[in-house]
Length: 382
Image (cartoon, rainbow, N blue to C red; front, side, top):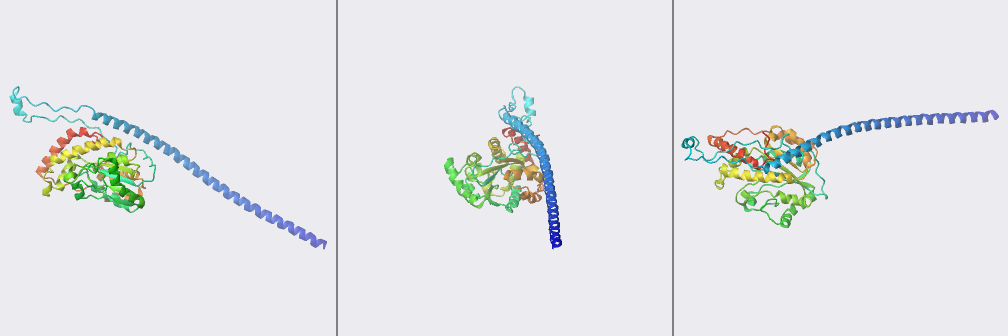
């Protein structure tokens, strides 16, 4: 009996030792796993620290570019107030008849000075690298594309189509009848009303519905100006849009710029077979373009930081891929949403111009070389 009891005690001790050993092994394994997890997190923390340093360096570079760009904008704005070079005085026929016979033109254009403007891909996000402040309330984004007729609004259509694959989009379409009668389907134009409260009420329905649908509203088809009747004199009222930014919508603006002579000829060519547009000669349209670009030039400094982009059409169709980032930042969407669109952007084949059109282009180039001092912020660097 005593032997049996002793064996039981020994067996119990062995069992306890075995259990203790097993628990120790389990604890060691658990500790090893915890150490491995700690090591993994430490490695991740080191990686994040390196990324933070890299981003800090990149941010410093962006801030330097922003400072340089602000200086460029200030310099360009000051050019607006500088005295424009005078035209040459008319030739006095009594003082020098021989000179008059050699120069039949009574007025000579001055040699144009290079206008100041934006470079670096000519993509600017006011200043180039900054973030748009979030609206106080959750409001639908409203993207307005401001560009003279013929500046290439159609080239952005693939971007809106790609965007529609991922988010809801409400496109404001061009309506010839509304334009002609001075009625705009969302009242973003000057002729809608000069009273802010009326203007606001005209726009309210579109954006209240967009808020319900969680949609982005895009007006990218109404040129500036375009059409006949009231439409031929109408400018988008970006000033009133700015007043409603943060009230009805979260405003974004793309200023679409193109060689003014090419834009003018494109606008004239579009309606040359329509008897109702016989007034739309290259000279008439050149005046319209001049007024519109001067108007846009005054708008640009008013646009909030991070809420606008200036896109030069010729650069856009030549190398569209470089515009994916700026447009994605402007819209606040991932770049992936827009990538499919840019494979569809391409240069149109150059149209063969007649002798008359070549003469018109030469006249327009000379005219705009002189008038470009009215829009120094939009004139490309030479």
